[in-house]
Length: 558
Image (cartoon, rainbow, N blue to C red; front, side):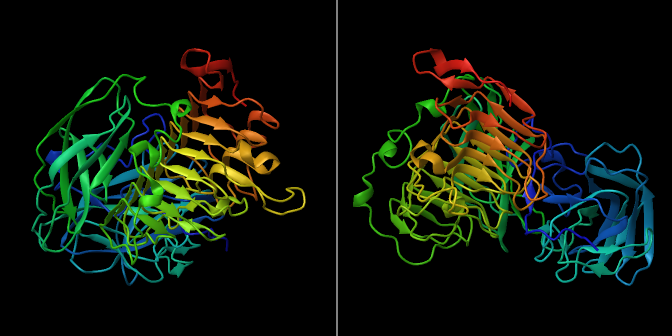
């Protein structure tokens, strides 16, 4: 039985790469939620999607869940990969294996979330375990270990322990489980309003900064709740445009020269939402506004860019608690696992030869206007900031990264913008020293949206040890959904490179737009010897500062 023996990755994937929305939340019908329907239906899974796919089976695949309040199941849904075929039936079962109701899917699309509405909503009881299943015929997606801890949205929660169930007989109650794999079977639930009904306090002091043509950075004063604040929704007037866990949002994918009315609401685990904050008017700049990667250096990225002398910063000692903002400090190998942490104008020193974890199970991580400095560790990609675990977003803004084995390794939802990544050491003979190579930025697995925007990533100092300024290599699982825009890339055998690897593949949602490349690459500016290549390759040029917008010779899609 081959049920996806892969590392744990709970991913976030944009509904379509052309939208490039950061951390959107959608209703079961695929429409963005609004202020008018927030008390409406809940799904267990909101922004999560599978980390990989497989073609064995067929199977009956399912998930155990509970609701903290009574209500009705109105729909059954499942996540579909391209290549899956045949008829699909959704079934709701009791924990003992009695089939309670079923529905046949019609009008399915080629991929993505599929939804079937029950002819009669099925009433369920509070705090009672149920199982939802949908058969797979040829292909299915999963995240190994994705249900090892509870996934909660509003009153809904998955069951911990032997969850993610499968069976080899279609239409029969599945009882087997493999490594708590999430097979992305889900329901739509409408509650009766019992349980915790106290909403969080309203967010205040919403402020904007770093407004460009396509994005804006937002911050606000955190809300409080009688139980716990679990996150925030950000709206353009009544339309939800982002759902985040920290008291900040770094929006990207907005429309240039457009007025937005930004409102923020806090939410708790029971699904209660606060009143909307006072509206903040924001108008994005022209499409050309904001600094591009060929304008980024250590004068506008890192500590020098914000007027901080790194050697004058006091040392921060002790653990970093959830919800902390650490400013104007020196940190040595900081532990960010508590989540919902902001690192602001700090000098971060990494001393190890292994990975430095910037991910968290507990909340998003934001590093901005800082310097991440290694100790000259020999070149290897995993000595870079490494997003592990991957189920909460990581954002790195206006930060200088240097003297490490690599620039960054981000496999979950993440944004790297206006960073200066340079002088990454490469030692030894790459022909004989296994694994000794340098990546400016890389992804090794994952389909959550990774936005790499307006950075200078230069690994020319690594010489022949330089692998790629940006390397797409599915070493640990399927890769998709990467945007490279407005960057200046330099160094490497191929400066930007994508390949299938170790039996794993990458998808077609790779976008490279308006990037510049230093001259003198080892083999070429870009290479895609296997896989589908770049789905979009537009306006990419050799860097020539003598020309307008640094446009030199056009580089064709590899």
